[in-house]
Image 1 (cartoon, rainbow, N blue to C red):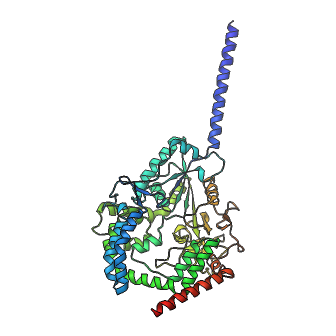
Image 2: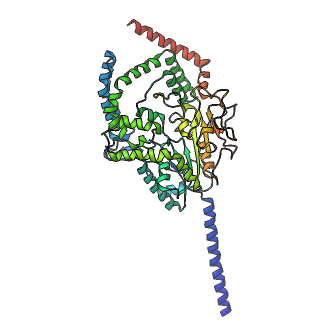
Image 3: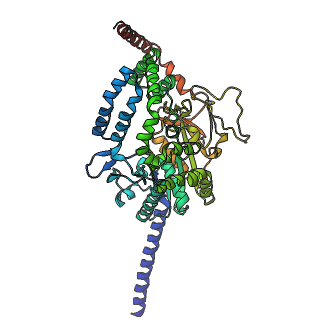
Amino acid sequence: MKKTFSKVISIFLSVVMLCVSMSALAFAADAETNDVPVIFVDGIDSTDIINTETGETAFPPSASSIVSGVGKAVLPLISSVLTKNYSKLADPVSEAVKVIFDAAACDENGDPVYATTTAYERPTEEEILAAYKDGTGYTASDAIFYSYDWRLDMQTLAEQLHDFIEYTLETTGAEKVNLIGFSMGTCVIMTYMNDYDYEYINNVVLLAGAYNGVSTCGEPFSGQIAFDDEAMVRFLYTMLGEDFGSYLLKAVIDALYQAGVVDGVLDFATELVDAILDDVYEDAFKETFARMAGFWSLIPYDMYDDAKALLIGDNVTEEYIAKIDYYHYEIQANNAAIIDGARDNGIGVSIVAKYGSTVPPCIVSINEIGDSVIDTKFESFGATCALANTTLGEDYVQAADTEHNHISPDNMIDASTCQYPENTWFIKGLNHADHNDSEWALCDFLLNSETQPTVWDNEAYPQFLTLVDGEFVPMTEENASNAYAEVTEAETGFFAKIIHVIKLIISAFKSLFSLL
């Protein structure tokens, strides 16, 4: 009897141990197949800012705000045009700016004036787990999207990101996260890594980053505004697609350009800006954009002091100045040191820059190439870039003497001057805010590399990629056509006839008006 009982106990214990072992194996298997959670830290204006009392959008401005603001400037504008006395337009324009952006206004300390929230809703635990990767391949649906109120200072945004990362780790049971920073999101991540060390980070991708600033923010903030008709047309061309409708629009734009209409409009804009800019800066900018701390993170380091001299005075508090100074002097000035610190802690940091367009044509740096928003030289930590409609030149020699070739097949980029030439990728033809499956696949490769990835690790992802039929392919001399030159190639055959007809119509109207 005792032997029988002992056998029963032994069998029972064996079954229990087997179950425990199987559970442990199952857990281990899950741990192997469940990858590190991916958090995509989005850019500026990735989600609407909502007035919680009225329910209207505070940013982008609501239709009612725009109508109200523009209404204040219409009659003065007409009067100014008729009398050619543009200086008297300064007050109405300033008032219009303040009305349009009033709902998103911040006070002297950089805090929102009105009760606002973002349209972004923190994902539930179920949503985070649904997005949590399971080893099946990284796509947009595998990322946990994170957004924020971009008006706030970077230290506050970094603190909020830290809370979200902890929430994600608690929900998934993971020990670390992968981070993709896009646009202003890279500024938030840089501040987070500086302020909260690197404990929770596995790998990082910095995508089309604004961490080194943006000319289209820095130059207007420091008083550098300029217009150019050729640059305007070039910018509009590169923002349009290759479909039939886009070609029609290109035809119209070209006709207006050839007829001198674009030049005339921009001459008027230049004269108007020269007459009212100083007053508008003083009466409107200082009370609107200058009080939104997030904007100051987008100003390149060498433009920061000039921008402060122009827009910062008694319109903000010393505490506010300390907030915006912190990002520039503690973060932006030390971006490379922050990245080096991450790498010293075993974190892979990869940089992805875009080009194929120019920056918006309202600034002095009007011929810098970029991704339609940010200068490629800033995204890439210092690549040497050809100006729009040009190359580096047939006789150009790579600036840095390295063991690798870092000149793009289209001869527009020399990546040898980048801070991290071996770890910086360039994508041609994908505009700033555009994302596609190829971009996600590239991020998958970069985030899941066991060691710091380089541009030589995978033949599918060399240093220079170009967009062909909506997908990234390695750039070659054969597929590296100049995006700017392609515009004129479209203006043949049927489209040339359209342009000719439109030119005739415009000429007829000009002749008619000359008789009036």
